[in-house]
Amino acid sequence: MKSLTRSAPSTVSAATIVSSQLDVRTKGAGFTDLTEEIAKFVREARAREGAVTLFIRHTSASLTIQENADPSVLKDLTTALNRLAPENAGWVHDTEGPDDMPAHVKSMLTATSLQVPVLNGELALGKWQAIYLIEHRARPHRREIVLQFIGSGP
Image 1 (cartoon, helix red, strand yellow):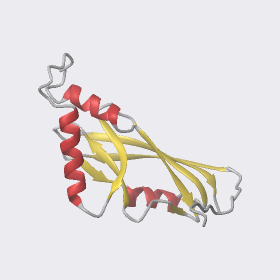
Image 2 (cartoon, rainbow, N blue to C red):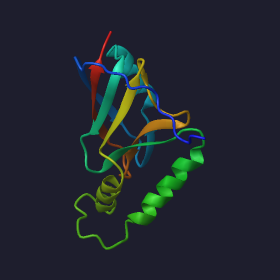
Image 3 (cartoon, rainbow, N blue to C red):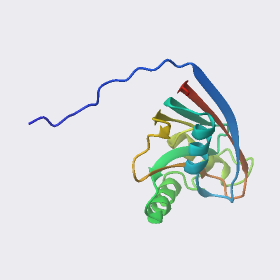
């Protein structure tokens, strides 16, 4: 009995490149679900097959793909990040306050860019997956995310 299966490969020419910038105003530390906005970008790009790349232009916020069904997952992830990079760890860099250096560490531990496949015009996310911006600073910020689809269009 075979334990692995794989679909047949498909080939497309990457003739389409579509770029945009997403501006997000955060409410302070926490997760902001970007999934629907990214799906809207894919629809507007008339994307068929390829990949969408997200890149956050900041060092104190980040991106992740995580569970979207149970909000306690995001709460526990916040707890984990705060344990890994607490404010009171004796950081030297505190130019913008006690949450400054912990925000940089949290950003380093997560991701500043993501790539999500696009199949048949849809994000190829799993059933329980969502794309999140993670704000690591306590106060609200305006965050810029560069979006780019590369692949085939209509």
